[in-house]
Amino acid sequence: PLTIEKYYREKLLWPLIETDLILIFEDYREITDKNLIIAIEVKYFPPKKEIDLDKQLRQAYREFGQPLRNLIYGFDSIVLWHIFHEKVEDEKIKSYTNTVNKTINKLCLPMLYFATKLLDDKFKFYQPWNIDYNNIEYVLNYINNSCAEKRNPLTIEEIEKYRNAIKVTAGIP
Image 1 (spheres, one colour):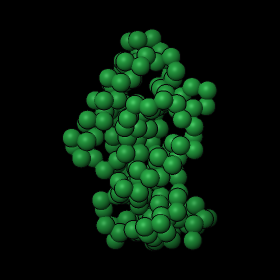
Image 2: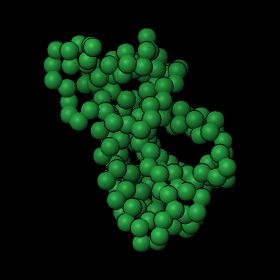
Image 3: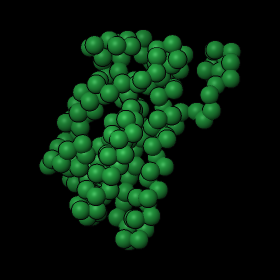
Image 4: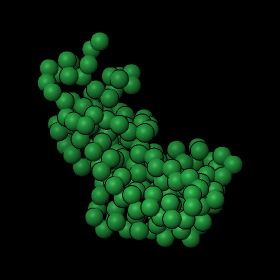
């Protein structure tokens, strides 16, 4: 089978892409081309004993590197999405997500962050704002609109090879 390494006749960056979700929207602004390709790193926080949840929340800071790594692979935008189980307390979610959001903003990291709680197929937002439950269509529209504004800071030349590989793999012209 044809691999990216064989196609470009060179060794690829390591580690390879391991993103949880890839979304592709039409890019009306055509900044890179006609596609807005987004990598989403999802972290789910199930209900746990208090001490176990605190440990999991502390470890979640390690997850900044995963979405940032996707920038070198040619994604237009990256998202870190924390999804909390409905039984996780609102105050714990607010405290934690405020800290994560501040960290991303203070460091000017080129990623979109949002945190939600899932209940009956709807998402309650905690970041970037605190609003009531919305359906998945609303979430996707939010991702599309927000990512159109928060772009990969690398130049097209730096990422073009990998971006083209993503497009070929996804069957995008």
